[in-house]
Amino acid sequence: FPVTIKQGNNSCYFIHIPRTGGRYVSSLFENSNEVQCSHHKINTERVNGIDVTHLHYPLYDLHFNVSKIPHIAIVRNPYNKFHSSIKNMHSIHGCNYNDCLKTEKKFLEFVQCEILDRSYHNNWFLPQNKFISPNTHIWKYEWGFGPKFKKWIYDKTKIDISIKKVIYEKFEKETNENYNLDRIVKKYVKNFYKKDYNTFKYSTLF
Image 1 (cartoon, rainbow, N blue to C red):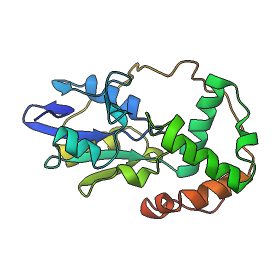
Image 2: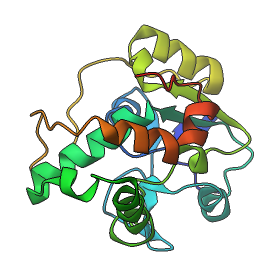
Image 3: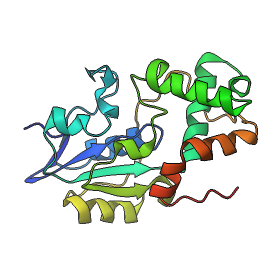
């Protein structure tokens, strides 16, 4: 059966949760010795209307038949992940998203519309817990991607990756410029993504 990452007799499935460093991690695998990657390129194929790189559970198990190999995933503080999504949407579309998020009702309408329609194809706003299978190993974005990450990958998958500077494709107009959200948005994110905060043990204190 097809797998996305393979090195010798060892393989794993990388669950790419959007806005958690997934393109960088995919590039680390792709640029490591004797590692073969497939179905890891953004905007090349879709399953059920969703970019194949951002499939949630159980779609990837059903499509790729990977339930018997290790799954690995990167998670991120829910507010920082949300902010990253909005910042990049602002750089692409130029909209003032604070206007769309200024009340909890507007926030819920915005996020639900993104999940069900506008961002359905890339799963940017789907709660992170929706991606996780029963046999997923979790790494936090905040822990970084240095030697400890390399060791963790090997411990969980027996795949030996190279930690080095890699060049990976970024979204059109993606920038590092700041984009500030109103403070009240943190409360709305905390309420909507409460299960993510609890599941991955992120603090809800601001």
